[in-house]
Structures are given as structure tokens and as C-alpha cells.
Length: 82
Image (cartoon, helix red, strand yellow):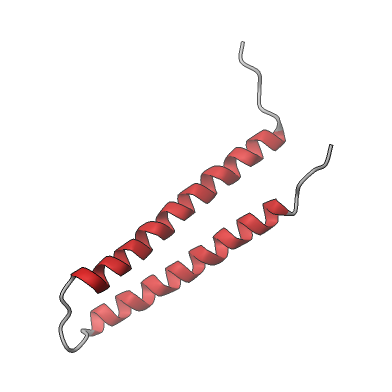
């Protein structure tokens, strides 16, 4: 029979899954931005919809980077010394 995970093990797994997921989303958004800037031809004037979309994506990236930093910082400080 398989042993049950302790609360610390479950918390560590949850933090790892959330951190990896947020990191992947952050990477995809940043790569999408860079791809759009480098390889997609842009018109001389930016459309209002594009401006709002870029503003929204910048807000999302800011939120994700803050969340990732918070997860890393909070779990780096909770190291239990046996």
C-alpha cells in the first residue's frame, strides 16, 4: 500500500505545480511579445485595440512576475532546519 503524503509534502507539491504553471504562462507571454515585436510587421500607427491589448498583457505580466516572486520568497523563508 502506498504511503500518504504529509502536509509538508503536499504543500511543497502544490507550490511547485503553481510555480511551474505561472512560470510557463509568464514565459509564453514574454515569448509572444518578443515574437510579435521582432517577426510580425507592424503598421506605422498603432490601432486602439492593439494598444489596449498590449496594455492588458503588460498588466498580466506584471502580476505574474509579482506572484512568482512572492511564491519564491515566501517558500524560501520557510525552511525548517531539522
